[in-house]
Length: 104
Image 1 (cartoon, rainbow, N blue to C red):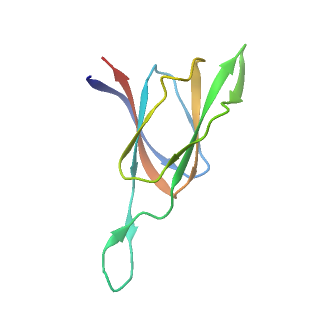
Image 2: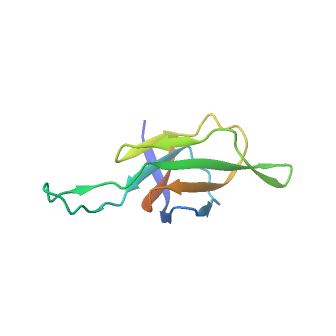
C-alpha cells in the first residue's frame, strides 16, 4: 500500500486542526525537547491524544473514540470513521507535527 501525504501542520496541545482534505491515516511526529539529565539526551514530553471531529447533518461533533499516541513516530488508521472528518482535536504533548495521508 502506498500512502500519499495530503497535508502537514505543526500542532500544539489544546488546538483544533481544521481538515479540508480527504485522508485515511494520520502520522504523528513528536517534537522533542532537550532533557537536562545525566543522560544528556532527548525525550518526548507526554503522549498525544487525537479525537476526530465529524460532521453530522451540518453540526460538528467529537467522534466517540480518542486515539492515544505514545510512540514516535506513529500512524493512526482512521478508515473506520464512517462520517466526514472536519477537524482533529489535539491534546497532551506540547507540540507535534501532524501529517495526513491518503491511501493509493
